[in-house]
Image: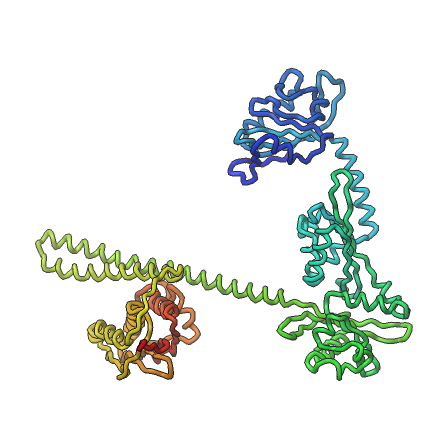
Length: 622
């Protein structure tokens, strides 16, 4: 018995009307079918059900003439939460003297939001006969070693023979219900796959020859052919794809002059780039190539036939081929693979040899498969994996930083509150006043943290509104200097400016530019225990450069790109020396880019950091 629960079932069958259900019914009328409601009343049944069970629409399903076991199972299913149920049962009725074995399928459906139950009856004897026929056909095809793909009317694969599985290097489980061209994609070019799709859509035949190497490395030619098969029962088409081995035919006709044209046609229809080289002592001659090869390598076949490959192939590819031939014999291998890059395309090359006993000649077959898409996919996959690692690292840093940055100030506030409470009891209002300053500093720190988080979020979602004006950037730099000079003095740091004497006009948002420079100065103050910090400006050609230089701890050059991401610091976790969520550089970097400027970081661990902002010089309209 098969059963599946209906709780939170995403596959719940729902229909608007009973007519909708009748239209999608797939079982033929030869199989009895009925729909009953939750009171076991028949609301629909087909002719086969009426004849087999002597019941009509509107009659109760569970009356005196009904089989007790069937009624008991169906009533149990109605009370359950299952979406479907399958069982085998021997049924007999008062109006019949014989018993018959049925496979019964019960399914819960919804019509106009009302719950109904579909009963389908399939004769076990008929099913066994059909299975015997299918097994006979299956064994005949398998033992005949015929490479065959069978699809349904939608082109979806429903059957593969073992021999075609070896050619595709895929099992029926891997490609079942896939569109047939998906299974062929690894063997052919996209242009050939597209022609197969066109043939399917027009219900016409399609043929394609490919070069195939089996697991032993033996070369063969397979002719894939698509044939639509009309089903007379419902006027729809199934499709059969065969893959006949035409290797013997091709090799046999190499010595037949009349077949040379056909051979060239087949070779030119091979999807991969194909080159055939004949060994003449220590010399290698251009025997043949398909049009795809000649087009990629810019070769005129008529001029190249029987010519020395030294004068035909470019030096790079010739070296690749000769190296592969040498490896082929050195390793006593049947075939050798190599990679080739040409015109920004990646090719997977394979070379094998064939001895022609009649003339005692040896031929080398070189095939090149375009794997550019695969290489690009691998590259993108590596990028995605790297990005995923960075995101995981970022998530970890975020959780650690936020836990630290939020817990620390609130622990401080909790401690301050206890001290203030004691002071209140002792009327020590002077101490309370002193501690309130510390409380405000803690709260300002938390407020700045959440403000920075919101700002990063707005930048990432492109919700930041810029109000650009043309201004003298030195005014902004002096403003930042005045605001941070006291803090630098308190920390014992020499804080200076070196600003250009001339007006350096830039078109920026004043508030955003001040926030950028402020963030850079605050970052320098945080990581400079002693030494100097300088803000400077100068005009270099048509660029205004603003720089913040410190003699602090500096950064590893390889970590700079990572440190420009949100919540990133060189030290993470609870053991890091410096407070902060790692948002200052991120905000400064992203805002600079939004303002149309460049953001460059020059830093070495232990020697300090120089951050340069570059903006195009602006001109006032006269």
